[in-house]
Length: 179
Image (cartoon, rainbow, N blue to C red; front, side, top):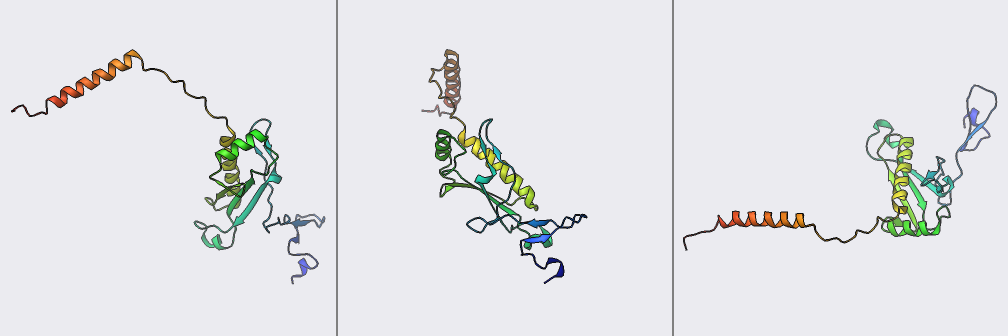
Protein backbone atom coordinates (compact mmCIF):
# COMPACT_ATOMS: atom_id res chain seq x y z
CA UNK A 1 0.00 0.00 0.00
CA UNK A 2 1.20 3.49 -0.77
CA UNK A 3 2.45 5.46 2.27
CA UNK A 4 0.38 8.50 1.43
CA UNK A 5 -2.85 6.53 1.56
CA UNK A 6 -2.17 4.53 4.73
CA UNK A 7 -5.11 4.57 7.07
CA UNK A 8 -7.57 5.62 4.41
CA UNK A 9 -10.18 3.40 2.82
CA UNK A 10 -10.52 2.98 -0.93
CA UNK A 11 -13.16 5.72 -1.14
CA UNK A 12 -11.14 8.13 0.98
CA UNK A 13 -7.96 9.70 -0.29
CA UNK A 14 -6.28 12.88 0.92
CA UNK A 15 -6.59 15.82 -1.42
CA UNK A 16 -3.79 18.19 -2.36
CA UNK A 17 -5.00 21.75 -2.38
CA UNK A 18 -1.85 23.45 -1.28
CA UNK A 19 -3.17 23.90 2.25
CA UNK A 20 -2.60 21.77 5.30
CA UNK A 21 -6.27 21.09 5.97
CA UNK A 22 -5.87 17.39 5.20
CA UNK A 23 -9.43 17.17 3.89
CA UNK A 24 -10.65 13.93 2.39
CA UNK A 25 -12.23 13.39 -0.99
CA UNK A 26 -15.07 10.97 -0.44
CA UNK A 27 -17.10 9.34 -3.14
CA UNK A 28 -20.86 9.39 -2.61
CA UNK A 29 -22.38 6.47 -0.70
CA UNK A 30 -23.63 3.57 -2.81
CA UNK A 31 -27.36 3.18 -3.33
CA UNK A 32 -29.18 -0.06 -2.60
CA UNK A 33 -28.22 -1.42 -6.03
CA UNK A 34 -24.54 -0.57 -5.58
CA UNK A 35 -24.72 2.43 -7.91
CA UNK A 36 -23.15 5.68 -6.89
CA UNK A 37 -25.43 8.63 -6.41
CA UNK A 38 -24.15 11.72 -8.16
CA UNK A 39 -25.30 15.19 -7.32
CA UNK A 40 -26.09 17.57 -10.13
CA UNK A 41 -28.98 19.96 -9.97
CA UNK A 42 -32.71 19.46 -9.54
CA UNK A 43 -35.04 19.45 -12.53
CA UNK A 44 -37.33 22.48 -12.82
CA UNK A 45 -40.49 21.43 -14.66
CA UNK A 46 -42.67 24.46 -14.05
CA UNK A 47 -42.54 27.46 -11.78
CA UNK A 48 -43.81 25.59 -8.74
CA UNK A 49 -42.77 22.03 -9.55
CA UNK A 50 -39.20 20.93 -8.91
CA UNK A 51 -37.90 17.38 -8.91
CA UNK A 52 -35.23 17.25 -6.20
CA UNK A 53 -31.85 15.70 -6.82
CA UNK A 54 -32.63 13.02 -4.23
CA UNK A 55 -35.32 11.56 -6.54
CA UNK A 56 -32.89 11.15 -9.46
CA UNK A 57 -30.76 8.00 -9.69
CA UNK A 58 -27.57 7.97 -11.75
CA UNK A 59 -25.75 4.97 -13.17
CA UNK A 60 -22.44 5.10 -15.00
CA UNK A 61 -20.85 2.53 -17.28
CA UNK A 62 -18.31 2.28 -20.03
CA UNK A 63 -19.41 3.67 -23.33
CA UNK A 64 -18.77 2.42 -26.82
CA UNK A 65 -17.74 4.87 -29.50
CA UNK A 66 -15.15 7.67 -29.46
CA UNK A 67 -12.64 7.95 -26.68
CA UNK A 68 -9.26 6.83 -27.91
CA UNK A 69 -7.07 5.13 -25.33
CA UNK A 70 -9.33 6.20 -22.47
CA UNK A 71 -12.43 4.46 -23.82
CA UNK A 72 -11.84 1.34 -21.71
CA UNK A 73 -10.94 3.18 -18.52
CA UNK A 74 -13.64 5.80 -18.01
CA UNK A 75 -17.30 5.36 -17.24
CA UNK A 76 -18.67 8.01 -19.58
CA UNK A 77 -22.06 6.43 -20.39
CA UNK A 78 -24.79 7.86 -18.18
CA UNK A 79 -28.22 6.52 -17.26
CA UNK A 80 -30.56 8.83 -15.38
CA UNK A 81 -33.62 7.23 -13.77
CA UNK A 82 -36.60 8.84 -12.10
CA UNK A 83 -39.19 6.81 -10.17
CA UNK A 84 -42.29 8.42 -11.58
CA UNK A 85 -44.75 6.07 -9.91
CA UNK A 86 -43.32 6.62 -6.43
CA UNK A 87 -42.49 10.32 -6.45
CA UNK A 88 -44.12 12.91 -4.22
CA UNK A 89 -42.59 15.83 -6.14
CA UNK A 90 -45.48 15.88 -8.63
CA UNK A 91 -49.11 16.55 -7.69
CA UNK A 92 -51.28 13.43 -8.14
CA UNK A 93 -53.08 14.65 -11.28
CA UNK A 94 -49.79 15.55 -13.03
CA UNK A 95 -48.17 12.30 -11.93
CA UNK A 96 -51.12 10.35 -13.37
CA UNK A 97 -50.95 12.33 -16.64
CA UNK A 98 -47.19 11.68 -16.91
CA UNK A 99 -47.64 7.96 -16.21
CA UNK A 100 -50.29 7.72 -18.94
CA UNK A 101 -48.11 9.59 -21.46
CA UNK A 102 -44.90 7.69 -20.62
CA UNK A 103 -46.30 4.20 -19.98
CA UNK A 104 -44.41 2.74 -22.97
CA UNK A 105 -41.07 4.15 -21.72
CA UNK A 106 -41.51 3.08 -18.10
CA UNK A 107 -39.96 0.00 -16.54
CA UNK A 108 -40.97 -0.83 -12.99
CA UNK A 109 -42.49 2.62 -12.48
CA UNK A 110 -39.28 4.42 -13.46
CA UNK A 111 -38.38 6.45 -16.54
CA UNK A 112 -34.77 6.11 -17.70
CA UNK A 113 -32.72 8.24 -20.09
CA UNK A 114 -29.38 6.88 -21.36
CA UNK A 115 -26.73 9.12 -22.94
CA UNK A 116 -23.36 8.16 -24.38
CA UNK A 117 -22.87 10.79 -27.08
CA UNK A 118 -19.94 12.64 -25.60
CA UNK A 119 -16.52 11.53 -24.43
CA UNK A 120 -16.96 13.39 -21.16
CA UNK A 121 -19.14 12.00 -18.40
CA UNK A 122 -20.01 15.53 -17.27
CA UNK A 123 -21.35 16.50 -20.71
CA UNK A 124 -23.32 13.24 -20.86
CA UNK A 125 -24.79 14.00 -17.41
CA UNK A 126 -25.86 17.48 -18.50
CA UNK A 127 -27.41 16.07 -21.67
CA UNK A 128 -29.26 13.41 -19.67
CA UNK A 129 -30.66 16.08 -17.33
CA UNK A 130 -31.82 18.20 -20.29
CA UNK A 131 -33.48 15.20 -21.95
CA UNK A 132 -35.20 14.10 -18.74
CA UNK A 133 -36.46 17.65 -18.16
CA UNK A 134 -37.85 17.91 -21.72
CA UNK A 135 -39.41 14.44 -21.49
CA UNK A 136 -41.17 15.19 -18.20
CA UNK A 137 -42.30 18.67 -19.29
CA UNK A 138 -43.88 17.18 -22.40
CA UNK A 139 -45.48 14.38 -20.34
CA UNK A 140 -47.15 16.71 -17.81
CA UNK A 141 -48.28 19.27 -20.41
CA UNK A 142 -52.06 19.55 -20.74
CA UNK A 143 -53.57 18.01 -23.86
CA UNK A 144 -54.24 20.42 -26.73
CA UNK A 145 -57.78 21.76 -27.04
CA UNK A 146 -60.10 19.65 -29.15
CA UNK A 147 -60.74 20.83 -32.68
CA UNK A 148 -64.15 22.23 -33.38
CA UNK A 149 -65.72 20.42 -36.31
CA UNK A 150 -66.49 22.92 -39.06
CA UNK A 151 -67.90 22.75 -42.57
CA UNK A 152 -65.67 23.60 -45.53
CA UNK A 153 -66.11 27.16 -46.77
CA UNK A 154 -67.97 27.88 -50.01
CA UNK A 155 -64.76 29.09 -51.60
CA UNK A 156 -62.84 25.91 -50.74
CA UNK A 157 -65.68 23.73 -52.08
CA UNK A 158 -65.76 25.78 -55.31
CA UNK A 159 -61.96 25.50 -55.74
CA UNK A 160 -62.05 21.74 -55.09
CA UNK A 161 -64.80 21.17 -57.66
CA UNK A 162 -63.06 23.41 -60.21
CA UNK A 163 -59.81 21.41 -59.82
CA UNK A 164 -61.79 18.16 -60.08
CA UNK A 165 -63.40 19.33 -63.33
CA UNK A 166 -60.01 20.38 -64.75
CA UNK A 167 -58.51 16.94 -63.98
CA UNK A 168 -61.56 15.27 -65.52
CA UNK A 169 -61.11 17.27 -68.73
CA UNK A 170 -57.42 16.28 -68.90
CA UNK A 171 -58.34 12.61 -68.53
CA UNK A 172 -61.03 12.89 -71.21
CA UNK A 173 -58.30 13.88 -73.68
CA UNK A 174 -56.54 10.57 -72.97
CA UNK A 175 -59.50 8.49 -74.07
CA UNK A 176 -59.56 6.65 -77.33
CA UNK A 177 -62.20 8.35 -79.53
CA UNK A 178 -62.17 5.79 -82.39
CA UNK A 179 -65.13 3.83 -81.04
